[in-house]
Image (cartoon, rainbow, N blue to C red):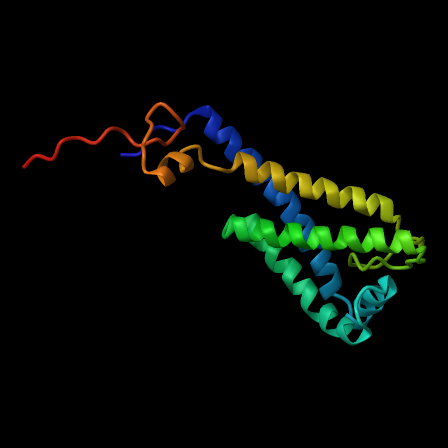
Length: 177
């Protein structure tokens, strides 16, 4: 028999869903923008950061949008969440590292490679992009914290503590036999 789920469970569930849809939606949106254009455009953007060997850029331009799309879809659907969060966080950290590198080296980045056609032709503001990525990282961290079922610790240790958590197992009934 499943214990009743209180209001706190549903608040956490909806907050988790909203955060996952936000982060996953951003990744799906930008991946779609990259996939809708020729990979050569994204390869040029990768080369502009001067962080990887030029021979890698074409492969990265083909694979990265699909990985971003995959991670975004996993987050939105809520499947393989720990793995999807780690994959998404790793990509966000790599993007932040690329922005920091470009700023510190004084590179003039004309296209950040975020996906889609640039509007207005102005170069991207790497500081704002970094801020956005830190915000997305924060959303992933908050989701990871609020999405954790409260009973996990008791279940792992093997000692059930019915006084803790929403889904703590009840005391075992004696076996009729």
